Length: 171
Image (cartoon, rainbow, N blue to C red; front, side):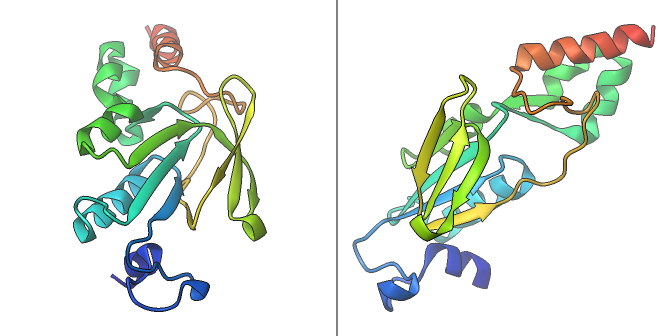
């Protein structure tokens, strides 16, 4: 598609216009590890199966992916939570490509003129990451039982405790 071609850049053309030259690598930073972010990675793999010209850095404030539509099951059976949650690192391992990495952090700042983003990591330290192409695919957000009310990035175990607490309230 045109969007994916523009993300990858053409292997022909001029690098000043953002195109990737033969033999060069392009770093794509994708902020958001939900449906859109994962779909973009899969489409890029379809275009370039070994990602010979790409390095993908996938960023999300959570280390886990929660399948929100299935969370209704967790409200009626706390044991369902584990079936509806996956570690994002497991997605990265599934692809089996060394040039896809996951970094947990909350997007703090985009420095477009410098082609960098700044994220706040779980230990509250900031990390600057450079990119050729930036994709913001953060999706929707609603606090409450579905998501934490603050900007905290809880672990899978901490989120499961929230679900168990919600389940207990309903018993």
